[in-house]
Length: 437
Image (cartoon, rainbow, N blue to C red; front, side, top):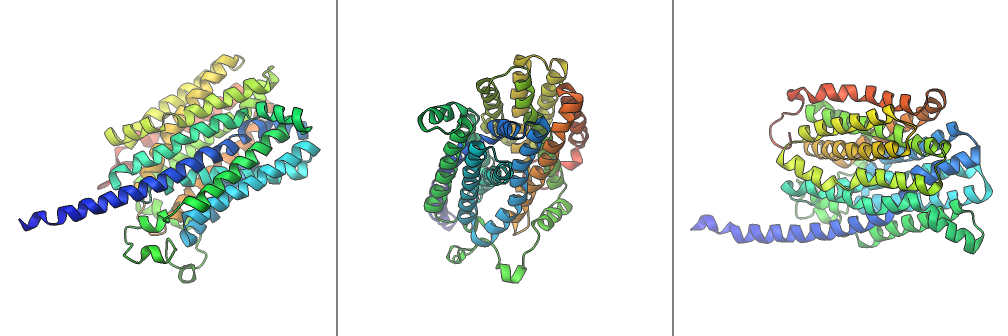
């Protein structure tokens, strides 16, 4: 008889937690949709703007590196800010900083200014870091058996905004006709408004604070402090990378997850970065290039919920193995027929799908493997590491394309997949007591 007594309380607690999670997830989803409209403009129009301003495909690759560096370098302070002040402050500040970058790119386009171009691309890259950290924020308050799906859902809704972003050149042309701004300036004006709107949504509506509520050790007073983690006065400005190293050393699964996330980012960024330039040199218009990047982004995000189901019903290892096969198929297509626009489009779609499988599975595996109380810093660090490696890939992809061509670039991506293939075949890297395998 007495054994049944706790059931109503447990049900009420679960119901309250589910209600809070729905509200938090709703705000994150809305901000993600709006914000990714602005973020999505950088991979296509941003690269074309850079080539237009600098008259160099090498500098176009460097411009893509600049936005990726913004995501990498600011991923670390955003993670630390979330640890100190919570997700609401960190995410809203990131979106607003990205909006300021888009505003600078309006000036860069209008005045053909390289001095505004590169700082603007660095700042707009912060939006990518915020979009990535939002997926972890979605798991802070989720029940354990729902975390994978919550993470995948936030990744998935980014499809809506990210598909629109690369095509802002079209409404940018309308703004050009109405105001006298260049088409690129009009596109970045829309991006600035979208990124600023996302920042305001988070700043005004993301309550209660997800991270403090999500701490397993949080007690009744956890939400009162407003801080998600121990005071910075007691910890100092601890390097987020130290948290990442601790996680990798303490868990084989964490190390495998980091390898998967970084590999997918490097392969995807290196090929995607130079696809607009490659298509442009083969007669592709801004509209064709924008649509190509859009379908690539659909591949990156649209199937994320399916990946979540695969992880839950199969395993993260199965999802990553599937990703490796898809990525290899995409790169082989690009190697086989780089002169065909249709082939490049199909390859880019498959590249996006492979990235999605790897990123969602790797992120879920990494989040599950974290035992450190400073997990926001570790999460920021893994995103920063992935973006930093992606920035290096973007940096090299421009000169590589100029010297060797698009097929050779895709072939280099195949070589980069080899370590992940080897790790995927080692069962011991995936098996630890409890959690996702």
